[in-house]
Structures are given as C-alpha cells and as structure tokens.
Length: 180
Image 1: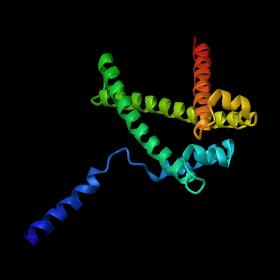
Image 2: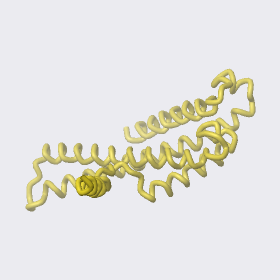
Image 3: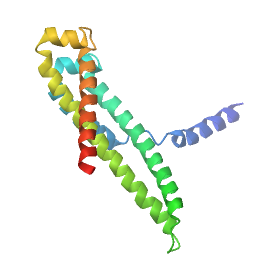
Image 4: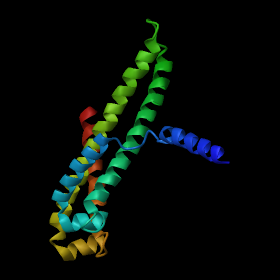
C-alpha cells in the first residue's frame, strides 16, 4: 500500500508541472502589470484606485495579479488566433518555392498578427489610464458624477470603464478614417 501511495505521489509530482497552462503569467507579465497599475493608481488617485480593486492595503497587489493573469490569458488566446488565421491565409495563397514556404508564411503572418494585437492591447491600457485621469477630474464635481455613475462603491470603476470604451471607439474611428 505504501509503495502504491509513493508511486501515485511521484506520478502526480511529475504531471503537475506539465499541467501548468500556457496562460500562466510570466515574470515579465507581472513586471508590465506593475507598471500599468502604478500609472493607473497615479491617474486615478489612491482612494479611487482602492475602490476599483479592494482595500487600500491590497488594491495594488490585486491590480497587478489580475492584470498579469488577464494579460497572460489574452496573449495565449491572441497567439492561438493569430496562428490559426495565418494558417488559413497561407493555405489560401498556396505558397510555392522553398521546401518550408508554408511554415515560413505561417510564422511571418502569425508574428505580424500578434504584434498588431499587442499594439492594440497597449493602446487599450493607455485608454484606461487616460479614462482614470478624466474620471478623477470629473469626480471633483460630485453631484454630476453621482448623477452619471451613481454613488455606490463601484461608481469610479463604472466611470473608468465607460470612458475607456468611448476613448477606444474614438481611437478606432480615427484609425479607420486614416486608412480609408
């Protein structure tokens, strides 16, 4: 019985690292999340920042943790999507030439699509920081702020979310008119 338990424990220990998903945050994800959370905290103010993520004691840590996990998950999904789209595009083109033309095509297109997705993520982070700045200023007029977003604990978060979505929509509209 002991040998069976030891064998099971060894198997579980060997399998556990392999079970870690590709979406686990890397140290770089935490480092980038810390930079983002620092900018967001500065833009929104300590009190408003705390209302978005928790108490004053753990708000920064929650922000970093949530942001790093979200970034890792999004990066994994974006890489998978970029590769599958690249495969479809390269099959449609039916690359000719070298022995590995299809693989090179997929690699180049996947990298380009992932880079575009990363650029969009960076712009969205900037939208949230800018939204936090404008919501911090809007919060000074507490009557109008309360009328627009309520007076509950999550009012500042609602303001940031709504404003960030508006900024993203405006940015995308500008990009579309610039490319048209």
